Length: 98
Image 1: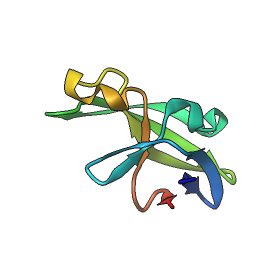
Image 2 (image 1 turned 135 degrees about the vertical axis):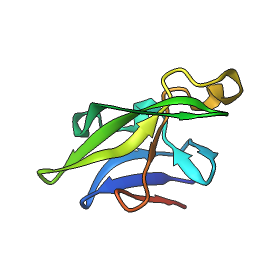
Image 3 (image 1 turned 45 degrees about the vertical axis):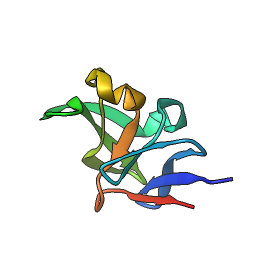
Image 4 (image 1 turned 60 degrees about the horizontal axis):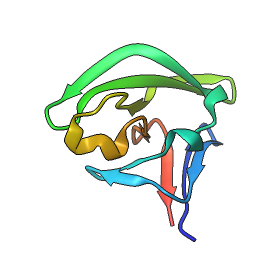
């Protein structure tokens, strides 16, 4: 069965057998993230076709990685498939799928 994982500082912070891919990024379902590693930040950005993104700092092995992950709490209607799903910045997290 296919599996996707995301790790930060060598710690797996999300893993799932179902995910969405948008713009080459794997979006993990909210239920697949290990919530204790995630802290919301005040950062937000806007994408013209996805909507407004919110961000998380991800803490693993006593190291906080600011804005390492983002999600769309209320995406535009055409992107509802990623509502609440979490994606990770390359270079701040290691994401794999097999």
